[in-house]
Length: 213
Length: 213
DNA sequence: TGTACATCAGTGAACGCGCGTTCACTGATGTAC
DNA sequence: TGTACATCAGTGAACGCGCGTTCACTGATGTAC
Image 1 (tube, rainbow over the protein chains, first blue to last red):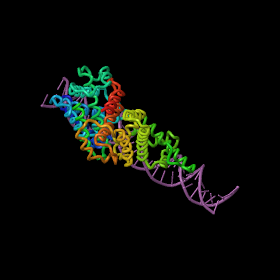
Image 2 (tube, helix red, strand yellow):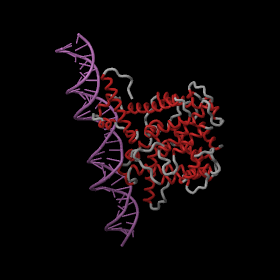
Image 3 (cartoon, rainbow over the protein chains, first blue to last red):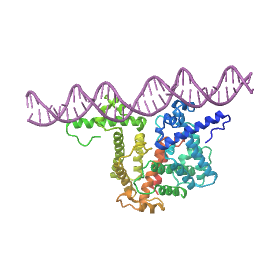
Image 4 (tube, helix red, strand yellow):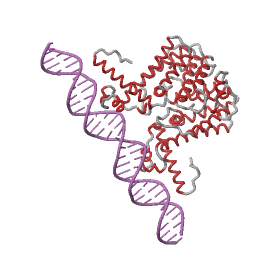
């Protein structure tokens, strides 16, 4: 929540208003998605005029960028906290789903259809790799079935940084991510409604399949 | 392409213009996504005034609805054609990916972040079940590993209609769908860029894992 | 402690834009006798 | 075959809206001497 430690009262106030702007922005996004985010609407909600926001953000894109970064950062923090607690893959899977269900629009802001014309800031890549690092630690001993893909991934392990996990573990971490994302995004986009089964059960089944190879 | 067989010249002309409107709409969507779709822009592109479009579509939502329906219908047709040709799961997987890569925005229109405030027409559910029916046929003999989820799905098989596939096959069809969707949507949303590996290889690996349980 | 000045948060008016949608209309195309 | 009428595609003007963003400004808060 707090901005990089403010000292003077003015700086403290600035950080406070900035935070409130973001809070209101999240409320709007939670209500109707990122495309409905309007600077004027936020200002009105805070009882100030539209142009006042330009004291705090250069423009709309900068605000969105910061929201995306914060969202991503939050997920990474949760993952790292879980890792520090020494949990295994099933709990990481739950962490992921809890985070997604907590605010589906936030989830879509990070993993959903890219906003047209919007370019993700470069440092989200760094945060993404933090998430992957946690996954790789948890997968170090795991492995999906042997597959030619593992020779491909062994030669293209740039994304894994200097992590020492063997190819089978890299593969495992990737499918952990993609499979869970598959069920989650279809669920949150409403594609399971009317089908009759419980999405949580399917998610749990996928989690089990990933934890016991 | 053709609207339900027109007879009189006027009807033929109407259908023709309707189709061109849709074509231009797809061009816009392919360029910048569904949220950028503008009736006025389409009209201008066709050399007519904005209000003229209201002869053909009641409003913007009706146009979008029809586009979604057509997109979904197209996917279902490809699946059914593939099924008629007697192909197996790997080819169905390829059909899916080819269709998605052909026009990512079309893919996202169907499977992406739901458009805020937009309600999917009820008959897309029917088309979705056609797709699932093809999948179920192909999965009839397949099965993922035994899992408690299969008892859940056995009791919640409404979505499968009157298909006779055993629970393990139902489970298999579901994860076929969700896992492929996972890699596909992350790839199309750009989340693999900069990671270094080839998304096609990962997709192929997931396909193999689903075809040889 | 008091005064002079600089900083800066916030305002209100304005710009230009494009959107979806309505309305009364013109003029061409088709239909009936 | 010709005339009278109905249908209907398309126009142009207009409405009301909300958006992001700029600009010159006021007035309060903080800083320096």
